[in-house]
Image (cartoon, rainbow, N blue to C red; front, side):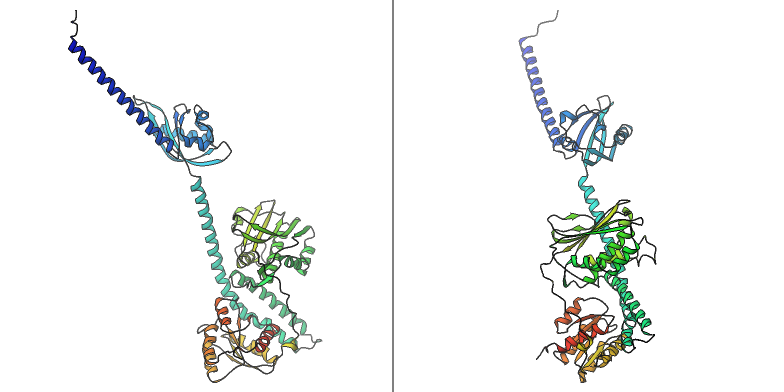
Amino acid sequence: MAEKPTYEELEKRIQKLERAESELKRAKAALNLSHQYTRGLIEANLDALVTISAKGKITDVNKASELITGLSRKEIIGTDFSDYFTIPDAARKGYQQVFRDGYVRDYPLEIKHRNGTVIPVLYNASVYKDSHGNVVGVFAAARDISKRKRAEKKSKKLEAQLQRAQKMEAIGTLAGGVAHDLNNVLSGIVSYPGLLLMETPEESPFRRPLLTIQESGQKAAAIVQDLLTLARRGVVATEVINLNQIVTSYLNSLEYKKLKKINPDVKIESDLEMNLLNVMGSPVHLSKTVMNLVNNAVEAMPEGGNVFMSTQNRYIDKPIKGYDDVKEGNYIILSVSDSGIGISSLDLERIFEPFYTKKIMGRSGTGLGMAVVWGTVKDHKGYIDVQSTPNEGTTFILYFPVTRKKIIEKEKALPMEEYKGRGNTILIVDDIKEQCDIASRILKELGYSTISVSSGEEAVDYMKDNSADLLILDMIMEPGIDGLETYKKILELHPGQKAIIASGFSETKRVKETQRLGAGKYIKKPYTIEKIGVAVKEELDRKDLYS
């Protein structure tokens, strides 16, 4: 029989038990604190964290899981984890990979939110085991990458826009150089027939060939203008215009009537806003833009269909994300829709590239039509949106900034007698001999006396010992000083010297600087008798700068 413990032994046992109980309480408290700490970390995590049993049932989730699914913790626990993904089979495959490899990293999946939103996630997971080392489930995390996807999409769009802009700029630079040279060549074809027709009797058999040459030259000059538009050197947005007048003028044009005659199965309708506001721009380029858009729409419907044009005032209060990103502001909108074959997404990325066309070359224009539309809109500080569905149709929406200025009525063209000269001396400064000859021939025909030099340096040397009533300055002369530098040096010799500026390009900062110094009108090559005659007459009649 065992001896009864003594009082002292019982006291020691009680103390030992008390210590054990105290340690157990501390352990429980530490365990509870650890649990709260771990739970706090889990709940604070922005990723959706879940534990999944070996059978694929969800056993626990955090707050982020509720947010990403739109469901409560109670609704989620006990359900199959694959139910929450747009492609359940892909989710199960990733789950099986965890069991096979022990983990999975950055596995792409899509979670379905309760409201129908699809959220792209990266799925990361690893197995967890019991005390015997047996796998009993999976700990998984789903990271929402919606923002990253949107940023990547935006970045790709910006990159594509940059590449498109760089491509257009490169082609534009090439087109600008070609256009400049072509303008010099075309001057003879456009200008000389006018001079010869002045000396040719009405009954002469040569009049019709001369008119044909002149007309052909003018058509070629129009194509050159298209090239200049691509080079972003062809639009001078200084005139107040109403787009309704541009559209109406086109609908009454011979080009439109011819288009309708060739395509009787196409119905073209328009809806123009009554009180349309004005824009600043070039009537020639905007008219060509309307014509190109309508031509494109008609050609997209070989079996016939409907084209609808409209204009409207619109205030954009929030930026519009589309083919172009449209900023907020007041705009005039020109819309051209068709019910044609539509444009594929691949072609949509390239439709504004010069010479990119699905049409039959030689039968459907030059391949510059949509490139001219793009260049014109950009030069008018506008935006383009394109909406198209293959086999359903396409809509082009053009946004032009509004101006509050009013339209000024144009003066009627003067008869030649009104701009005849009075023997004034004109110094022609141009590095192209043919340009000097043409300008000289026209001006002599109008009654002026002319001297021609082939560089800015020669002009300055001439003016050191001579004078001229007027200078005609070519802006681009290579090599050597350009029109601006030439004018500056001549002003030092002859303060208040009158001049007009000529170029194959549109106005530039150097043109405007030359005008700021006192030069008058700017005229674009190729020359016509009326164009150069009126400009010279107006400048000579202008009040002297130093009078």
